[in-house]
Length: 239
Image 1 (cartoon, rainbow, N blue to C red):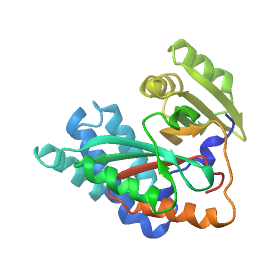
Image 2: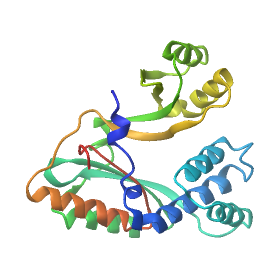
Image 3: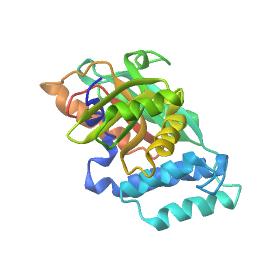
């Protein structure tokens, strides 16, 4: 798998003028997580991880607090997850994760991003079988064997562990995310994670060229403009 996570960063975070969108998406995700799993980060590991990730992405504290307070208030929006996948420009593949209070609207908006860039939205599983759904942790450590042993003792389904320039990268099944993180914290103590998330990692990367470059950029831009879109994963190298 190698250092694939570096090529599969969330595209919405790449552009400085997208900060408001990033804040909004974190706010929505934190709201849903707190409403479903509890408002206290010490008892809701998913919420604690999400808050840590938001802070690393420089989301202001007031945005985080507002989302949690909104969840405490009850009522409000009833968001549900939705995932769409298909083929993008130049034969690329994409997976789009959303949180929506209107699935019909969201499907129409995402489908438009495909059709307006001469692409085709697919059915469930049409491209996701070409990706690994992985939990990824990157942190400073000098002995990958110690890390692997801690994970094995906790019965974590590890797919890869690598060490380079003082950083250890752990890939595990997405279903073992919490078990893996807890094993690392229990064995290694306080860990400052550079990467701590679940991603879709493509089995192989591809390149786009010619007119497809502009189309692919338009495709991502249209998706990133949608409030319901939380994450976009694709297999285009260095995009």
